[in-house]
Amino acid sequence: MVLQKLPIPYNKSERLSKLNFFYVTNRFVQYLNHNYHTSLERPSRKPQIHMGHRKNHIGHRKNYIRHRKNYIRPFFTICKYLKSKSLQQAFSNRQFSRSHAHGFCEIAYICSVMKYSIIIPVYNRPDEVGELLESIAAQPRPDVEVIIVEDGSQTSCEEVVAHYRNRLHTIYLSKENEGPAAARNYGARQASGEWFIILDSDVVLPPGYFEAVDSGLEKLGCDAFGGPDRAADTFTPVQKAISYAMTSFFTTGGIRGGKKKMDKFYPRSYNMGIRSEVYRKLGGFSSMRFGEDIDFSYRIVENGYKVCLIPQAWVWHKRRTDFHKFFKQVYNSGIARINLEKRHPRTMKAVHMLPALFTAGCFIMIVGGFACLWSILPLALYALLVFAGSLATFRSLRVALLSVPAAFIQLIGYGSGFIVASVRRNLLKENEFEAFKDNFYK
Image (cartoon, rainbow, N blue to C red; front, side, top):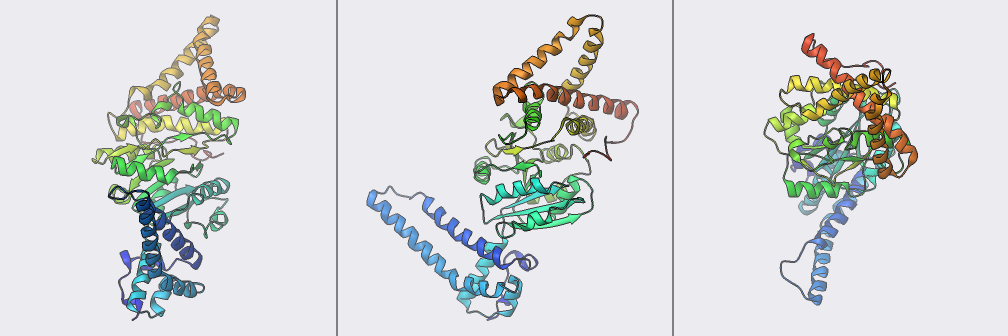
């Protein structure tokens, strides 16, 4: 019989036409190994004595071998034809018996159905993309696809992505520069997974990330999730200092996922997951350039979906590489906070106002210092607290020293952006705006 007449699972004909011999081979072997080990991990329904355990193990192995035999002949036929043709061409050009055709369809199903679609927008960061892809390839899964969206980069990462085509199911897309939100939405339109995992290109996945996500989703039963971020030992001292400023109790870091109180946590786009049907129903990310991830999280909650924090699903996050770029980032974050309040009234909390109060207090104390040096004593005490906290965290004198200016930049940058946006949006009645539009990445 002609296999093309059989129904292709989930109508993936267009998707199957893009598969290649190397990917199908690797994916199918991963599937068989995953199936075998999963069967051995299933608990027995009845208590077994030692000999029974051995019989149970042998029984699982026989089932696995029988299961593999059902696919082995059609699989080698696929290997034969995919060396020069796509899987869809093999569907249309080859005749099989019904039993072999069933195995062929099962293999096509295995190779086309995804649980996770990882969507990564990229702008001029080929080296970081390579590190991220390596961390994903180090924990292979047969149900994960990786979608890289080049957002108008001058330095392309296409060759880096091509290097992993035999280890991962990668999809490389390129478009004109419109910002990360538009790039994520563009990638989501090409994704087929049950879950979309949104990652920034400057993160690295630790071993066991997908297992942590699997476990968290099974226990919590949520529609969207997020995880915290950490600094790796390989990060530069400046990156560690910036990471400390963004996550420390002495700044505003407690609201970024380090705590387990879900009523105060909203996923960020550096490590966010959402059901694909929910993503599509909500229309994906908005047109905001900064704060678009918080806006999306607000809309998820406002539409009645359940959002959860999975503390074990953390990532290493590099953030900015120098203080100049870091200031631009946090300044725009302060502006975005006012824009978010306009879009989602009554979402602003007291913690969002603290950087503005800190900024105003610093100005008053510095001016007062010209009359009395004791006026700057509170600033010195705060710097000492940041230094001690960073030293206890990283055990590095250099990182501790750098953490002091990083903390001041984080609070003053955010606070000044917050104050400027408050005046322009509330008093001058201007529309949404952003700063450093033409030189944000310089």
